[in-house]
Structures are given as C-alpha cells and as structure tokens.
Image (tube, rainbow, N blue to C red; front, side, top):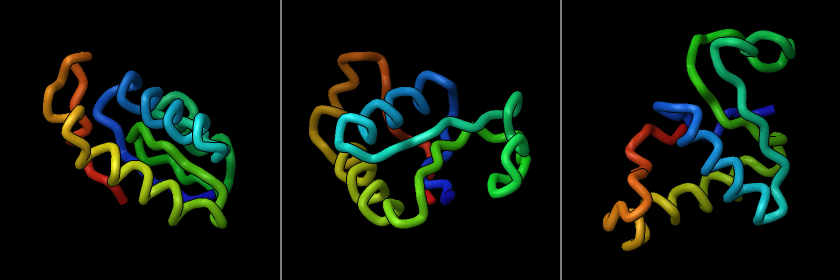
Length: 86
C-alpha cells in the first residue's frame, strides 16, 4: 500500500477517499488511531489516504486535478485541499 495524501483532518481524508472510490480506486484512511495496524502502513500519527501500489500514480493525478480545479478555489463547501500530496 502506498500513501498518496496527507490530510489535515478526517473530513479532508474522507473527501479524498470518496473521490478515489468514485473513480474506481480502492482507498483506505489511516490515522493516529489505526496507524500501524497493518504492517505495510507504518505508524506516523498522520491522517493518510493510502491505495494499492499499482493505483498510486492514478490516485495522485486525480488528487492533483482536484487541488488545481477552479471549484476548489471557491471553497463553497468550506473545504480546501491545501494539505500536502505525497
């Protein structure tokens, strides 16, 4: 599994996970409460969205597109993806 997004909140992580799931990419959220539960995902204390290794490049491209879309600048949902992408 490969981390593709580090979120500032669980809501940010959930929105990114929903984007990826809606695009057919299996995505999981690992945060401080579950980090390290799976050996492939080390404990860091961060909220991360992870995907299968083979889907990481596509997932990053989708996240980058979301972050650069004009709708993200409007912040009409009170949400901006200003977290760092991996």
